[in-house]
Length: 457
Image 1 (tube, one colour):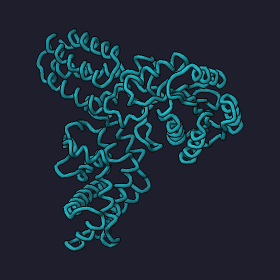
Image 2 (image 1 turned 180 degrees about the vertical axis):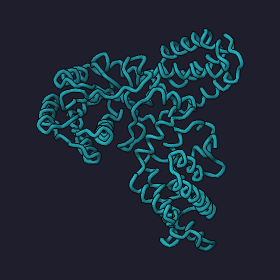
Image 3 (image 1 turned 30 degrees about the vertical axis):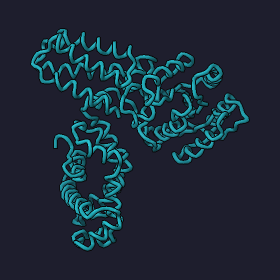
Image 4 (image 1 turned 135 degrees about the horizontal axis):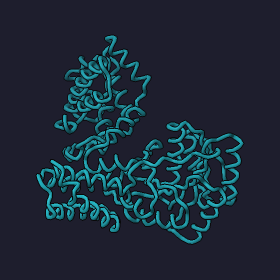
């Protein structure tokens, strides 16, 4: 996420961070580079202009002259202005109303609107413990109704059936009436998307909005369209009283232009980021955390939340008790840890939130991004016999050859896994004495490719 912008800004700001004194000249030179980095990231020109002017005004004034480390304060100013551009703080959904709280989703076709309905429904059910119903008012695409029904079953929320022969307003009103009867907390109404903004579409969605009077009207937009995302959001905002934005496909957006432009152009907050295809790949948008990630400082708070949500506490407790009682940590347990990591969004999803991630070697990053590492390790463990998993010490020459052939890997890959397992085994013994997330994070270093360690280790 935002790799290009992060890399360019980190390199640019590194040049000024060691300066003992900030002058108008070196601030001007640095800001020229910052300006180019933002434009290359497809950030809208008015946003770039205001951002650069604000940083310049603060950097050459009293704020810096009193500091002992002006270069570092300059970076702090850039971070503060990035946060300001994106909205400063997370704005949660407003659900304070007589149930059911009606949420309406709008957006162009292909932006990931129906998937976002399901992701949001799961978020509300699992993290906010709400009863949720979803309904599709998209009468132009029968597949959309079926898609939402399938997704509703997957995320375990109620689905209200609809049909292409019905009118969108009738569908939505019937669904809301049903939700009231069943004491549902939240109902999410999916609307029709179009390939582009047109008058007929806007008239229809205005009528639907007037009929259902939603407490939240969320615009779903594809982050990969850059500043076009902000312009499309503005067109919808001119027609509808939007309350927020869901930015999708952020995991594929190396630039970050949409995230930095939307708030300025529409005046509406980004409330969520879609960060993957899975139904749990939806994150509340925290401008301060995203600004920190853009500047290569990581996002430790989100990482801790991700670990706490993803770890199966019952299994973790059983494993801790097993290790503590002398039962040891074997390759079956190691495979279980790999699977839990996959449930947390994969190793890359966790590592990219760590400070200094941009300093890792490109080939190691490519390996992690492709998800090859955990997949390969799982394949190697799956090619072992149950006895070998329980007692890895028996895995010698001929067994290694058999395991490598069975998993489609090389003997050196098997050797590396066994070495990484040994490191993990030692860490688990330490954790059983005194546990903690920080120790778990450090232990992940033993599972990295050769020559690669988390920055700062």
